[in-house]
Length: 306
Image (cartoon, rainbow, N blue to C red):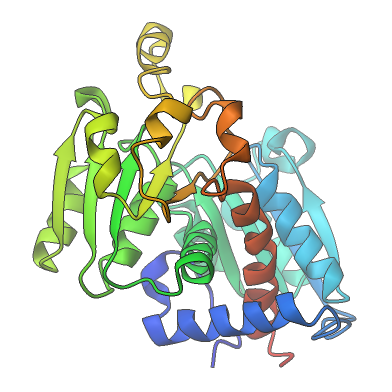
């Protein structure tokens, strides 16, 4: 069903297709031998023009666990981009070597351009402040595994909602589920973009914008914390002023529901105190592991080895 398909933004896959990936990821998680060696002889090109830890390593771990191999680069300084090679030419070259391409770029729209020039499937691993669809798959799988459902939840997004591509992707994906409520918690300078709000209004999704995290805590089924991203700011003073606006600690957690799920796409800086890590509601490290399983499911599906 997904063989040969690219994934540039969450809407590229239907809810039914995403659900099939979740079921496959759960099967992989439960049976350590399932699909092992299924990608033997396959190559994944990982082209990272922007730093990454979890996304790059989880894709490489996923491909290796499936029996395939990886080639690529972890930062643009080790590619011909420093010599002035165009992205289109880099993609044409990589597509001639690999069976699929995973790419991260600091530029919005880069993944779509890559898809248009590639002869093999392209997976967007983050394009600027635009989309991060495989993180969205990770987030949705985590919620489903821990709460047993995705419908009928109140989800709070807190922190950098203006530049947070993980927030944008997840909000758009959640909007397709039933009875979802969203609370966007941010300082005025980092509010959710208008285009996301327009999408939610068009799909009749209930959402509110707030500045106070503590007052919102009792309502939430899921809290999606994000860091204020230094790399997205043009003005260092603005970053310093806003970076510690929200810090989730044990005191704030005490007003949350007993079955609250706390997510974070990571890396974490100061926005979640280390003391929260031992709270059973803290799911961000489990979330990172689910990311590997769902990427295994995605790679096996688009490479057609099922």
